[in-house]
Length: 368
Image 1 (tube, rainbow, N blue to C red):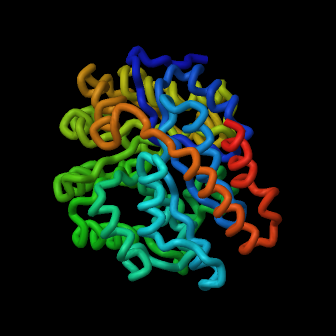
Image 2: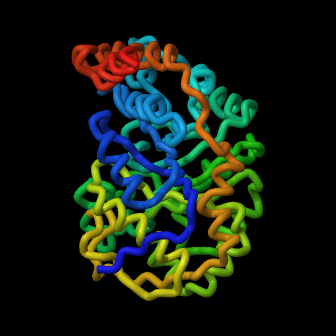
């Protein structure tokens, strides 16, 4: 087994997930195993469980120089049809910024999210939110769409099918989601958005280029979607040309998470390092995590990017968007926020507030 370690120091991974506060040791071990210097925790909120954001706040509090927090939105008010008292989306943004979060994470744009919440991002429900995000200039990591094969029952990978990520004619379609993005960007051209997983445009690099040219505030995030590596590997010379041309518009990310082992994390990050830094031809190692699929799925051809391009992708583009170090967390505000999330979770699900992740995090923060 060949696991590639990057020769570049100071890498910032802008797309990492932490699903439980009990995953702290695992995430720190992954950090050490990969050689990554800092991580941005993309925190998708689960209003019924009071989870998603609290554990990221805990990591920021405990490791203030290492972890950025990209806070996801809480739709408890919408989910309860107004029965649960919850702040509006724009108010949530203000709270996140004052509390010391470094940006926002949006999952609203993934088809599974639309299945759960049938509200387009162009709806009036989001109007004040988009205006506030543009006004403040807070950076956003936004997941829009999924790979095209997820709409084809003959082509969808087994690992995606197991997670019910397959879609049919009754689900929102890929081009409809892209059209919504274009409408949002037309209304709010100063938004600072990094689109997760290359915005699932890796199969059409000319289109990806036109998208970047049309929207100067937009970047593309590299968290795989393993199909991204396979698509670009079909013509690595064209991929290299694209990455050199748009070197200031590509942000490094891995989709690492505390549900992986440190060994799996090292393999996942190593695949990206090797793809970006060498001209090797290789496959996903069998030791890779399940979401990267089996080795026989496809061949990856490295692009051997220049050192200055690697520096921008690995570190400088994130710093330009978000900053060189995490914002200071207001621990008191974080405790209050976690307690509110615990109360909202109890109102939504009936689960006692004290048993939620949010309440557990609030208690841990109060001990600091």
